[in-house]
Length: 200
Image (cartoon, rainbow, N blue to C red; front, side):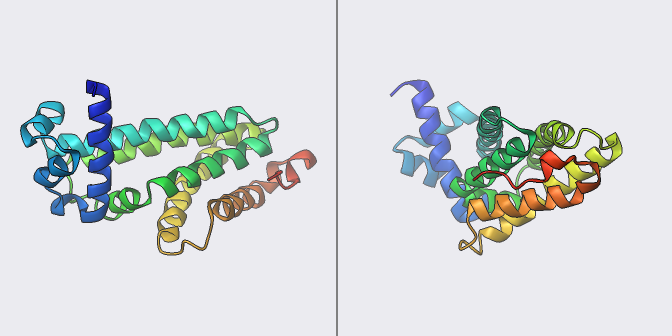
């Protein structure tokens, strides 16, 4: 197994264990055992349990950016960009639901850098969302775009967290609720072509 493959395996297992046990309840011994490697090898790759957690967050941040940006790139209208971006976000969270819930519920239980790493992910997504909103509602003032960006980031997190306890609400349902929310909230700045419901 190459170094990159081994690192990916370790991160996969660590993400699962962090999601199951939380930061405090996770041990490097258990992760090493599940990976089939020695604990010193884990330390060689990541330095510490803190380093391993931050590596998991960093990978999730990069993957989330990649899947949302790729999804939006395939859209043909601003309305479709919004829909595709929301759907990609909630679909991604579905595949990382347990560690996602753990990070939002226990950000202070990890190393001090955890909160900043999570906030950095929010900033990344905020930049994407702000760009979408400017295209979606080009007549909206900058203050409205900035405010709705923060509202959407917070609402998406809360809705995604709530969905971990209500799996009957699908990613498509969540994306529809969020796009409807954006459409109604930004209605004063939309032209008629943007008031149509997105194709699903």
